[in-house]
Length: 290
Image 1 (cartoon, rainbow, N blue to C red):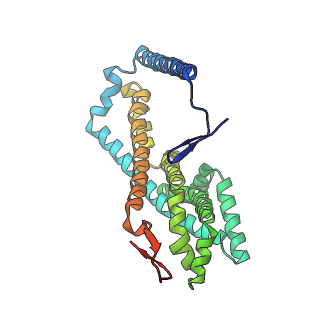
Image 2: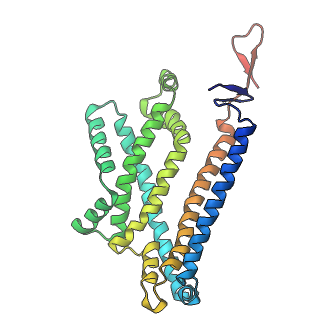
C-alpha cells in the first residue's frame, strides 16, 4: 500500500489502473442489474397479490382517514419534540455529572447513565405506563428521554474530552471557573464536533416514537394500524406501509438536513471564524490582526 500526495489530502491507496477500473465498471453494472431485478420482482409480487387495486387505496381518499393520519403525525411530532428537548437537557446534566470533580456526583451520574443505557427502551415505557399508571404521552416521552438522554450524555462527555486540553487550561489561567470553561469553551466545540452523532441519536428517538402504539398512544403508526386492520378496505396493509414509510424517511432526512444547515451556518458565522494574523512588525511584541 502506498500513499500518493494530492492537493489538500493524502490518499492512502493505489490509484486504480485500467484493469481495475474495468472490473469496477463491471461490478457496478452487475450490481445495478441485480438491484433493478430485485425491485422489479418486488413490484411484480405486489401486482400479483393485488396490492395496487383501487379497493386497497380507496381509504386514503376519505377526509376522515386523512384527518386520522394527520392527527397521528402531529402526535408523533409532539412526542418527538418533548423527548428531544428533554433528552438533550438530561444528557447535558448527566455529562456534567460524569465530568464532575466530586466523586459521589460522578458515581451517581455514571450509575444512572449505565443503567438507563442498558435498559431496553420498550421495557422502560411499559414500566412507566403500567406500574406508575402514567398517561400514554408522558410514559412514552419519559421512556425515550431516559434512554436517549443517557446515550447523549456519553456523546457530550466524549465530545468534551476530545477538545484539546490546552484550551481548558488556557481558559482556567484567565480566571474562568470550571463551569464557565465547560459552558463557554468546551461545550460549544464538543457540540460542533459531535453534531452528526447527536442528530443520529435524535433520529433514533424520532423512530422510537412508533413504540407509542403499544401503549395505545395515538401516534402515526397507531393511525396506520387502524387503517390496515380495517376489513371494509380489504386489509390494506401494504398500501399503508407505502404511505407511512416515506413520511418517516422524509422526517428523518429533514432532521439530517437541518443539522447540516446548522453546521454550515456555524462555519460561516463571523464570530467563529479564525482571525488572520500577519507577521510581527519591527519593534513590536505582537503581530497585527488583519
